[in-house]
Image (tube, rainbow, N blue to C red):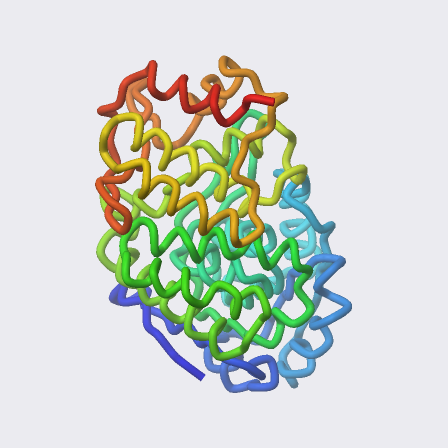
Length: 360
C-alpha cells in the first residue's frame, strides 16, 4: 500500500492506494467519527463490493443506498434521494457518508455531505480508474444541470480516500480507457517525463498490469495532491487540471449526459486543445500529433461528434465554469508538459479547430 497526504491543515487527509484495501477495516474505521454510516453506491458497483465494505464496518450502524448508474443520473433529483435517506434515518452531524463507486457517485455523495446539516464527513472509495486518479481527490463535488456540466456543487474535502486497485479488475474496458484520459492529462499538462513514461508503458496499463497501474495512479495522485495543497479553491494553478475539459464538457452536454463517458470527451478535448495550440503557434505540428497519437493509442476518440455544429459547440463552451466576465478561458499548451490558462487566443483559430474536429 502507498499512502499519500493532501496537506490542507485541519482538512488534511490520506490517500491509500493498493490492492486488497477493502479488506482493511482499519482504513475505514480510523476515518469515522460517530456511529452512523451511510454507504452510497450504484446498481453496478453495489453487487460487487457493497457487502464487503459493510462487513468491514463491523458494529457501526451502517445503512446503504443504491442509486442508478450513469452520468445522466448525476442530477438534483437523484441527489435528493441521498437527503431523503439521511432524513429518514435521522442521521445527525456526526454521521459519515461513504461514496462507493466512480466519479458520479463520488461527486454526488460529496455534495450531499457538503450540504447535509451544513456539512458532514465523507469517505471516498473510488472503483474506477478515472475516480482513483482524479475525481476522488481534491474535494470537488456536485451535480450536472441540463445547461452545463458540474455547474452546481461545492468544495468539500473527504476525510480519506481508499483506492483499492483490485476493483479495477471488474472495470469494463471502455471505462478503463476513459480513465486513461485523465492519466494522460497529467503528463500533458505538467509532467513531460510522465508523458514519455506513458508512451512506453501504455500497453501495460491497457493490459491491467498491477504494478504499472499502481505506479500511474500513485503518480497522478501525487501531482494532484500538490496542486490541491497549493490551490484548493481553483484560483490559479488548479485550473490547469481542466485541460481538455471545456471542449469535453461541451461534448458531454451537447450529446446528452451518458452518451459519451467523461474520459472519452476529455480525450477528444485534449486533442482539440493541442490542435488549437498548434494553430496559434504555441506548439509544433509534431507535438500536436504526438499528443493525439497517445490519446488514440489508449483507445479514446480523437474526433468530436459531427452532429454538433460550430455554433452549438461555441454556445456550450460559453457556459463553462472558466468563463469570467463573459470571457472564455482555455487551458492551452506552451509545450508538451507545460500549460497555461489563457483568454489570449484568436476566435477564428478556435472556430477552425471546432470545424476540423466535428467534420464528418
